[in-house]
Image (cartoon, rainbow, N blue to C red; front, side):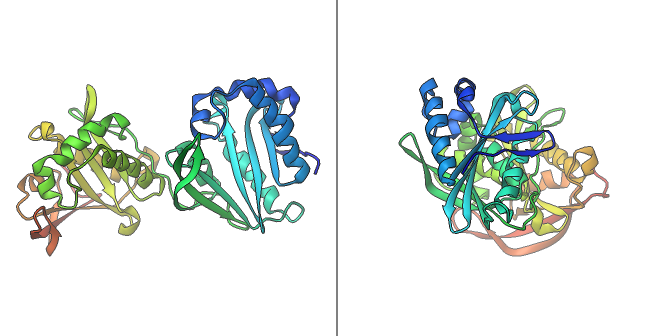
Length: 373
């Protein structure tokens, strides 16, 4: 097969040539590209030369591994790569990387759609399935797949080997005929500022604070489902899962921090959004160092404000929030009542606290048009 170009409005895909070797070697010094791909590290000029003259050439000749350079349509300068590797029986895997200066412009999602249109076309290979995979944690790549309509199928443990180390991978599929647009919302995690607390996304630097809070006897008592002991590995998985919840459109989870910065002093969540038909469940815990300082009350109020604000104002446009505390947890009850929630029922024997005791859950709700403190 001879290389050919794919074009759309302000987008050009053309096979890399020997003239691009220096540019490819330059781009592949980027730490993010080296972090998430299986490219050699350090990446040398000879690697770029072998890529163009061997891998690209033989891939096109066989028709089984088609690689295009994403180019500036005006000067044909290389901005990235996108490839289509045959897996046989009507399926292929799509892969890509993008130069740092080209990111944030939706170029790669447009390029992947263009490749997918060719892949599914009758005049093309007529594929039925496109697959995508990326190491768990590669959120930019996942965002491209999400934007193009790929559906996340799950996680494969040890799904890829990178420089001798097995890493877990996400896998996703796009089927011929499906719309090439997101199938679910990807929820933002905005930074929300209050006078005494800031809600922000969790960071890797929060691990130690999460471990301290979740090993605290009070936290362990009331949240009976927490692992004990609560280890740094569990905390790191917790942070990854908060991002997963937002990417899957299920909820928004914030770390609470002091206005002057520093590690997390609490976790505040809007959970299970698809299950509540325009609503969400509120959940939270507070680090021992921040208790009694009004952090939880203000943070819950900030969450409610964001939840009820219209999407045009940057909010979620929800209509109802629910929250519960177990019998005896008066500190949590006071936070809920101060935030304006109203009791609406008791779920008898609804939860289990540390030690195996089964207790009632006291439920409250707050509507978008209810008065709030």
